[in-house]
Image 1: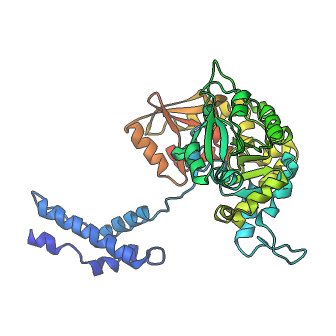
Image 2: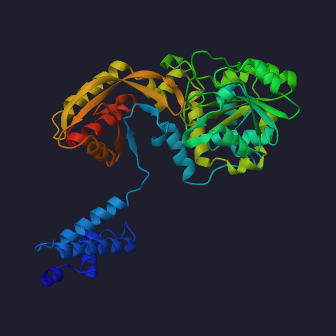
Image 3: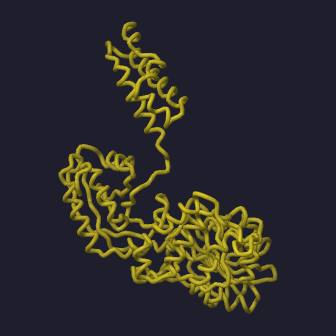
Length: 464
């Protein structure tokens, strides 16, 4: 036993091996030392507990093991991923992918200084959201616009600036809970507004809003229930009815649209997402929506509406806490510029619209080709093309799917859990979905350039 212990190399000996010396430029020295000591401690414990004498690997072999473990542990947690889930706006995978124009705009603005709050014409200080407000007004018909870091922030800011300490009347059937267990009543409480819920879960009438208005009413709130549906014996007042009531009683109407569509998605099979422009034309004082969902841009919350109310929001103390940075503004401007152009160009240049508009036959052909290529892989018992249904996700139209095709895989020699983990640990990570004891790689959410990556994950880097 003593002889075996003497064969275990020292920390300093391992640190001098080529494998670990080459890590110094990539990993902090203390991380390497900690890795060496951890492996040596484990090795000594193994020798101590072994029933028989064991062979000690050479210093070179040990250093290779240590180097590999250190590199695995030091991989960034935030890595690129290939979304094969069939959920186009997958929150866990960053929602909408950005256009090439948006990526280029971010890179250009990020590498140096930028006119974030400087009017280059006058040389005077400006507001940072002036960079995108004109485009937002053009696309929605609004008088004014500002941008904050997400739609939850937009909701808090709007309620705090317009109705702090006053009642906000909202239908009981619209008291939504959004992702991460954030509930509208809690958001309203944090804003300082007082929630006044009216109606029932399935039925709220305009009379319920009218009867609830008092001198303490600060606003009427409509919330688009984008992440669930109440069907059957239901009723909700229209936005036009709320606006008419608000004008009669001098109370502003706030429309929280949520996902937010700047273009009509009906041609892709989604009928239930309201257009922001329609909310503005109906007379809503303020309309709130996300920039990273149906807009197809970066994460942000967009607020458009009447100049009087947007000015109040822009000067509220919370505006500074919720403001966006120059990279978000650059990406959003590039995205809005695309949306302001032709529908044909938007489909070609915005990844979300490109994926939505991909013909079904195209997806089927790709699925058949990929399935044929990976069928002979040792970790695949069976692979076949299979029709499937994809969804927008991101809280949008949960009851409406879009036809798709996927590659359905039955693993061989390993479990589904092992296969899915192996795919997630690749670079880029590959994330599919498990259904009926098979792994499905849905191509509705995979750009054509990702097909080779899927094939190589199973059969290596051969031509695909």
